[in-house]
Length: 319
Image (cartoon, rainbow, N blue to C red; front, side, top):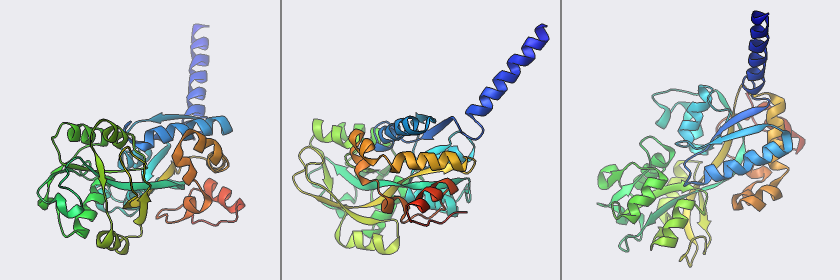
C-alpha cells in the first residue's frame, strides 16, 4: 500500500512539474536586467499584465542583461527575456558578443517595446562631448555586453578606441556608485529614460547627460540600422533644462522557441491590447505600438506573435 501511495505521489509531482515547466503553459521565467535599470521594473509590469490577462504566471528575475537572458533561454532557464535589439542580432548571427558561442537560434521575437537611449552620464564639468572622454576613467559596461559594444561604436565614431580612455567594466549600479565616489569620470548606460540609476545620481549629486550627436550620431546610423537618433526630453532628470540628443537601440521581448503558439499569441495580445494599463504603471508603456513592435527586427518572430500581428494587418517574418 505504501508503495502504491508513493507511486501516486510521484505521478502527481511529475505531472505538476510538466504543467509548470515543459512548454511554459502556466508558468514562465523572464530574464530582465539589474535592479537599477529599466528592464527589471518594466519586466515586472509586463509580468503582472500577462498574469492578469492570460493566467500565465511570469517569474521576473534580475539578471546581467541581454546576453545573459539569451543564454538563459538557450539552456532552458528562462522562457522570456528583455534584450537590446542589437545584442539579439549578434546572437542570431553569432557575431561580436556571441563569437565564442556561435549562432543562437533558440529564441524568437515577440515584439519591440521601447527606445533604449545610450546615456553618457558624468559629474565632471570638463566633459561636454564624447571627445572629452579621452584620458578619462569611463565605465563602458561589462566586457562583451550590449553596453560595451555601444560604447565601442560611439568611441570609434569619435575617432577613438578603448586605448584612448581608461576603461572600466561595470554594471549600471556599480557605475553609479563609482561616479558618486569619484572613482570614475563618466559612464555609458543604455536603458529606457528615465533610468533609476541616473535619476538617483541627478537627485543626490550634480550628474548630467552628455550629448551624442552631430557627426558621431550620423556615423553610427550610417554604420548600423540598429541606431536611431533620439531626444531625451528636458526635465527627464533633475537639473536637465534642455533636450539631450543621443542615439538609441530598441528594447525587445523575446521568447523560447519551445513556447507554444497559443501561449505566445496570448502574451502578445496581453501586452499590445493593454497599452493604457501598462502605461499607467510605467511611463515606457507609452512607446508600445504595432509599428514599434514589428520594425527593425534582425531575428524572426514567434508564430504566436505573428498570428497576433497578422490579425492587426501586419505580416512579420517567422521561421
